[in-house]
Image (cartoon, rainbow, N blue to C red; front, side):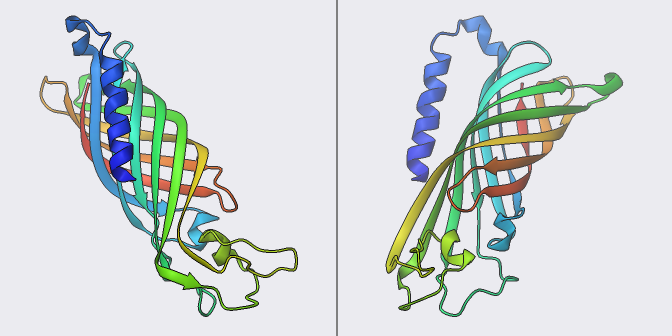
Length: 220
């Protein structure tokens, strides 16, 4: 799944670059970075801290405004601080996202190498859960939120009706917004950045909500 998303992002980027003239390449922007993600309620009821990664490319409309596309990954590991029901499923979940965003920036505050920017956007979020092995739900198991998180369903009498699962993917639209700070490298277009971004996706049953804090390199 990760390979498919990366290939899709690459093809989209190439398609976007095709119509550009040679002089337009000076207006291109790209960035890559990684850090940590922290889930927020209700996602935080089931998952804790994990790693995060993002890579993106875009076009500078002018010195302050940029349109860009991004690929985002964040892990959603089980929250060890939450008591799960006895014999509840366990495994791992990853979040992948392809988003389109608008960024407004000030690269040099009062002539200093320090800058600030805000970013907002939205796109497609894919939450992929995989069980370590086929998990058989005990007969007459009462529905609880943790089963919904892992992709199981409930019948009208309040019992889990899906008997086993190996993996399950949930796609949903989502939005994001954040703020970042940059440090320019001399007179070049390269910058170090740190960014905090809030994500919310309307995933089925349990919404996906988290904050990513990334550190990386940006070129404008």
